[in-house]
Image 1 (cartoon, helix red, strand yellow):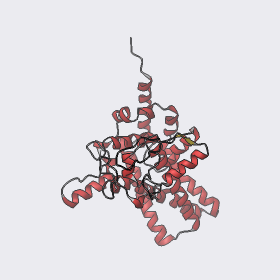
Image 2: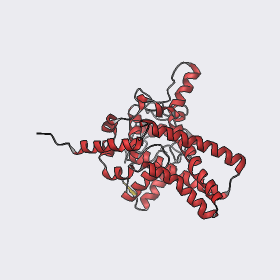
Image 3: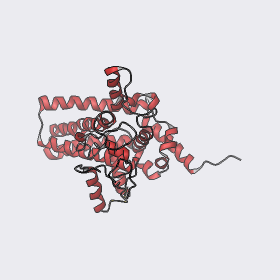
Image 4: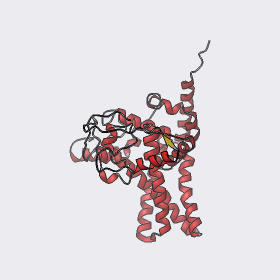
Length: 320
């Protein structure tokens, strides 16, 4: 008599089909190739807009708003919530975080969170998807490591995500039908992130020219800025800066990434206390992302926050 599949096995089969839909043509290279396209277009658009076209107040507001929403989706949504479950949210906010996080084009919530959990499991060791450890001798080896940690790891076959990774690091995500239902439309959310700024520009300026420049600022330029800020955590924040806590890896705190990433620059602190919703744990530090989470809690959209309480030493404290 044939053995009936377990609920998890059924969920894994659905996740496999989900990944096939996400990867589509060119298999696993579709996502990194799209990142290349978005970032090259964004960088070229930034040069043209600032050097020749000029910048309007509407363009800056559209860019700033889309940038903020994009970092909220990645740092608060993909990172602190989906990857580490540092707090809980309502179903409506959960769906919103999936959509906002997907607009950066870095991968669906399933892909992003699974890769990030794998990174924490093997931080700066063999198996880490994007460690910037030197790859070779001398300065060339250091540079190659930084480039790998920043972006080219997306193309490395050895660090690509497979079904084994889903079994090991993403069981709760794979089994979450509500998440998978929204996450399956990843490419539509990416497209939405391009359409929204154009609509905003058209509504404010009432011209196609205004819609076009708003599209560039809120679309490709925003993706270029958000993606490279996030990727600096993989490269810069594992290469230089202070390490006040013993995280047993090369993670570092990078103060100048704190504001652009809503607190994500306190990366050594995060690696020491990965389950904490607050990353600013030392005197004088700020964490704008935690302020947003607190605000969501006051609005009844977030709850069960896990916040580490430093004890004056470098050992990981238990969350309260």
